Image 1 (cartoon, helix red, strand yellow):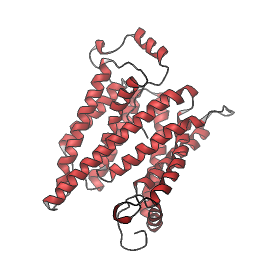
Image 2 (cartoon, rainbow, N blue to C red):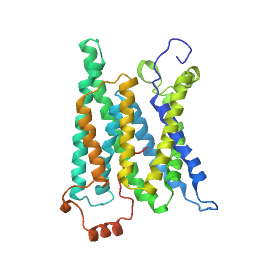
Image 3 (cartoon, rainbow, N blue to C red):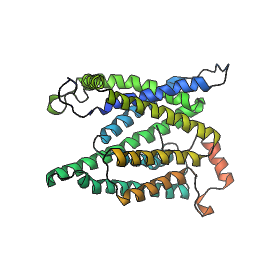
Image 4 (cartoon, rainbow, N blue to C red):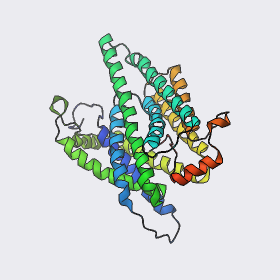
Length: 330
């Protein structure tokens, strides 16, 4: 406990988000260690401020959702970012969506629906011998958690569209962009934590009691170890992802993200007491297929679903951006 009393769960999603931004900031170290010797090119890092604000919103909402659902479901539901990014890029960036894009978005929708339904089916099983009322409460809480994770991906998709619209033109290295957004995000989160510390929530406690969180971290080296491991995993994942993007095709990055989901899934089943349901496998397959179809890591057996080379050149000339919707994020 924060005051050294009875042990209780570490329920501080906003503080956990802060460690995620620390992980993003560490990408700056990787950037400066790997950049070409003698390179002194300056970049306008202030353009990272706006997407960082959406990063804060997405991360905090996602971690609040994580307190109500399982890590496996959260990780799978993050795949819905492909759906929202595809729609937003068409609405706000005026990017044309071809038939293979719509097939991918449909696959993502089906996968998210199946994963969400599966999470509700395993909720009563994980409640064990709880009363029916407790089981129903757990079911609705799991549903709220799933919904919050999906809502968080709305903000992630908005962040990606803003990056493509305002950041891509500055030709900033990917690791530098992630690191600078981490700096802006941590600054914004500090302000948010100060506000939430003085905002009353349930039972008169602050919405986010940062002082209590720091006391719990101080009293539990295990909690600190998990938070540091979370920050390190984010840094390593982004560094590896950027390296793969530079040296290989999108298919390898899709494999990387799928392996992350499988790793979270396996850990949850083995150590976190999560329950397995076959529908989770079906939903994951649809989500992974949607991401790979959208990023053209796999192709449909129908050439009519894809634009011609001339149409691709027209799109590239009209919208000189990245155009991807990688499902991984950070």
